[in-house]
Image 1 (cartoon, helix red, strand yellow):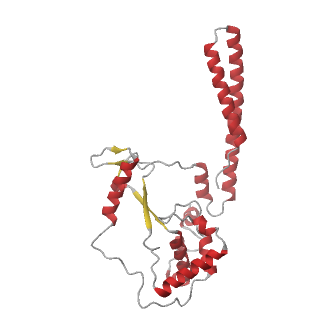
Image 2 (image 1 turned 90 degrees about the vertical axis):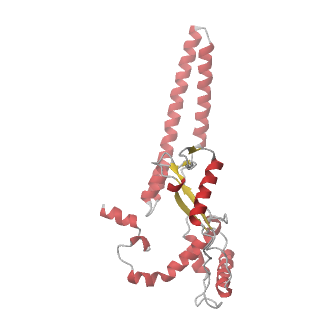
Image 3 (image 1 turned 30 degrees about the horizontal axis):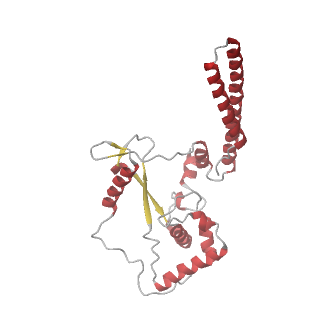
Length: 269
């Protein structure tokens, strides 16, 4: 949830800013001392009024950010950081082989793409067979309720995979989609139909904020998965959780429901 900007105050600030700029030009061009003094007085009044508007707008935005933090649940710490420090997009800072900074976005894309293709693709390896044994249905088919539960757990405002289907499109879709997707997944297992959701991944990269420039070999990668694959993974995790809980150490809080590693860290602190 992003803080909403007060459009009325925002337009008033722009209007007052334009007024004070016009007054400044009039002061610069006038030769009459009396008129110049009156214009300066009027401009100072406009500046003070504009400053009050700006401060009022900042207070409103701050109150909205505080409201976001107060309404957050277990993710309060992360919500606070995200609300108070909004991110701005920047192209990754990449160096070429000679150590020179690459500034052209197309050259950055080409350099990074070639680097990761060489790192992640091995033409000598064969693809892993997505299925084993003879085609057969699941002993426990995926239900609509299971699929809906997993789709509801998908997070909003996340980058889509290479299929360009955002989580929100599945999360807020009508109930008919649940049956369609569940039937498709069940038939894929029954007939050994490869849906390519395990292959459809898209690597993205970024550089750390503390680094002014980084060669492509030091860029950090992020794997963007398909939303359907995420949902299927969540279904699998829910099914194996009772077995995993039997041998999972208590220190592994990050893999337990309603308990994250950050909770443990803050508890110790």
